[in-house]
Image (cartoon, rainbow, N blue to C red; front, side):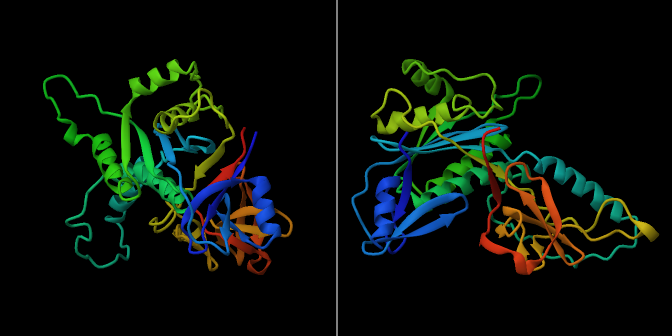
Length: 338
């Protein structure tokens, strides 16, 4: 199965991807430099800034637990991604509310009241913004390195509530989040939407099956739908020509938690949260002499916690800052198939 490497011009403009064999030739002749962007290896040309670009579509299959993305032209499928959805924000906000209310009965320092910084902005519930914001971050990441001309999205809809009171879809967080996502995504490239039954019809027409095991790492779980949507726009294939998948897992950061919920010795509540660990941004990909490629977690006692890419397991709490080589900052980790 042929593998493809994204290519950008000398000024950073995305160009058409190339094969691994051609990429090695460009590197050997000094016509390109190796680059790395949070799990995506690509080349930057040194002698050319522009080039001919073919139509490239990104098929997107949204989901409640996992999601699929496929980048495809008429000739080739360049990339398939299966990403875990952000699902923890609703419970985190509930816990934050409980902690804030409990502090009212204690003599606790607090910041001065300030004005509403979101006045006049598009307001979304935190959990809704986190879910759709994660999709948008992935699309922006792809658009920086690949010449995307169109996004083809499976359009999901909220079912109207029946009963004594009927709610318009305008009050649905799902519909509002989708509207915000489409508005932001349109700034990157034009959008084409198709309903779920249309995606199923395209899949049936090509003789492709979708597994009922939605949490599996199989291509037929989510990427089959994203590939079908991209192929609907670009054409060129009757069967997937590339079923290799990159698996993305978003990292959870505790940004605004003031302290631990349970007090320690002497009724002291230790500080908790933040996005910096001894000068390193949490989630950064680093290289350690012993543990290899891993990412940065918390810090305590002058040491940094390092975590494994595959499952997020903590490898050590005593990594010295001088031993770490920072590769990039990231808000996700990449794993292999389970």
